[in-house]
Length: 88
Image 1 (cartoon, rainbow, N blue to C red):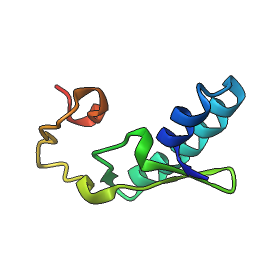
Image 2 (image 1 turned 90 degrees about the vertical axis):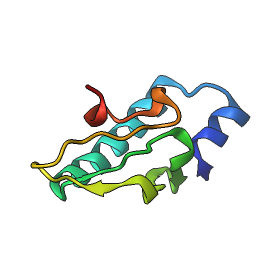
Image 3 (image 1 turned 135 degrees about the vertical axis):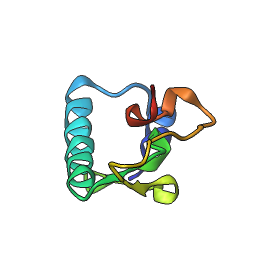
């Protein structure tokens, strides 16, 4: 329970099997977002919540609908969390 950042901070690195399950949940979430034509815009461990062994993506305040006619560019505070869609 709680967010992924807290889980890593309090209990240490994840085991490979845990990472694979988490990664699968994140990719399923991103697949859904892509199908709905949304970009999250601020994905980081503190925006990933663990509930009943399932990852829930939160923190959608920077999300937006994809518009194919508009350039995707956003300045971010921490580049290592910047979405791949916004990098040129």
